[in-house]
Amino acid sequence: MNRAWRLSRISARGACLAAAACLAAGRLWAGASLPFTEESGLRLSSSAVQSAVSVTASDCGGSATACERIYYIAQSTSTGMTQVLSALTSDELTLNPESGVRLSTATTPALDIQVSSITGCSVLALSGGGYRMLYSVLGSTGSYRVYSATSADGVAWANDPGTPVLNPGGVVASPSVVKLTAGNLSGDWTAYYVGNQGSGNEIYEAYSSNQGVSWNTPFLALSAAATQVSAAVLTSGSVRLVYTAPLSGSTTATQVLSALSSDSSGASFSAESGALVSTAAADGSLGYPFLLRDLSQTYRWRLYYDFIPLGAATGTVLSALTQSPVPQSMSPSSIYYTQAGSTFTISGEVFSPALNSVELTMSGQSSIIGSGVSVTNDNTISVFFNTQNAATGDWSLQVTNSDGTSGVLSGALSITVPPGSVSLTDNLIRPLEGGKTSVKVTIYAAGPVSLRIYDLRGRLVDDLLEASEPIGTFTEYWDGVTSDGRTVASGVYVLRSLGPNLKSIDKIVVIK
Image 1 (cartoon, rainbow, N blue to C red):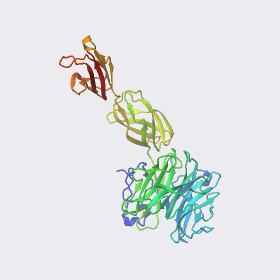
Image 2: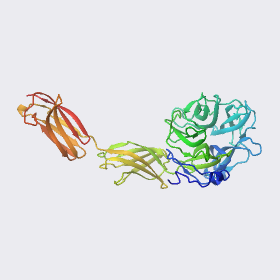
Image 3: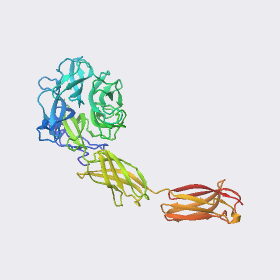
Image 4: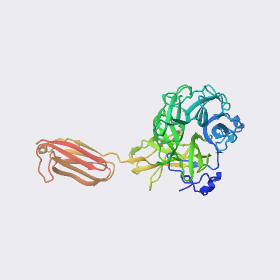
């Protein structure tokens, strides 16, 4: 396997407990629906990235074309309190911490419980300016809450009134808030969080139509043994959840998994195949996945996550990036080789605004190069393929981005033989008067053809044709005579026609 799929061990486990350079040891990048490639270097130490918002380029020194404020949680080395801190970045790789504390367990005014630690937070911009943060806490008596805070500039924060905005009972942690962008709920906020309503940790969600001031009653979004969760909205409007989870039978979170909503409401999710990243429990655990778009190449996704070595109290933030396009479906998915080509819609992810090529491939055949390629967005492409007279069978689709990276969808298009046809002329015949039925047969692949006449009791009357025929149209005739030369009795007879993609039953009436 190459490095994008499996990271080699670079140190013994014991050394990794103390050396940040060893934190990649033992991780496995699986064949997930959205494959990531690890990026070199560490993003932050002893921290956990939680959220990001766009800010003006001047906040990053004025020379950047884009800038983001990243929010993360960490424990104060002097007070031991959990704090929400922030960093600025113009490339999402170098995170430059800002001075001061955004929020902490000592933040006033006091909440309705004594807070022991902040366990997660998520920030969204308000339509009228400013920002709202939802943050989850663990109380000193074991109570769980999600509170709200607001800020005019994203730096100075103040708690909203001290009652929780989400308090469904049981565990509630790791909130991730997104704004829906399509469908009837467009503009509404949705909060996803890890909760425990008596059946183990699962992922819940709640809607807000007033930008987080109030929320509806939470409901189950995904039945999964999650420890932390993050949400992101695709260009198509669907919502993707990424979450840490243990392997079956374990309590240590060693995988980052994903699930995708079936529509833009973000309410019904299906798990995606494979793990985005995983590790061996003997090496440590994974935590706090956070998915966001690459700042400069927005068609790509970046995943932040914590790797916590075995025995360590805190993790180090690492990152991975989607590199290759991911074609997922093609419509139509089947076409006859006789058709004069068609325009196809390709759905998937990580499509660059301009593409090098889109082509169909099959072993032993010349590639069919697409023309008129139009990239609607990073989720959708339209392209014309001239498939007329192409070899029949399953063709794979290869999409190549502008940087030369390619993604393949095996068996994307089935090119098939059109169904043959049989047409009868004069299928009411009088044999004694010289009448006969004309049987016109059309086939689109060479091969054996059988035309047989049966009576209604299923007895063979005449082998009209049993031969290998070329592509095209040919005509046979039946004059109401059996294979041994006898004129049949009056009645109804059945013509059974078999051939390449041909299966037909027709009736012939004989009157003496």
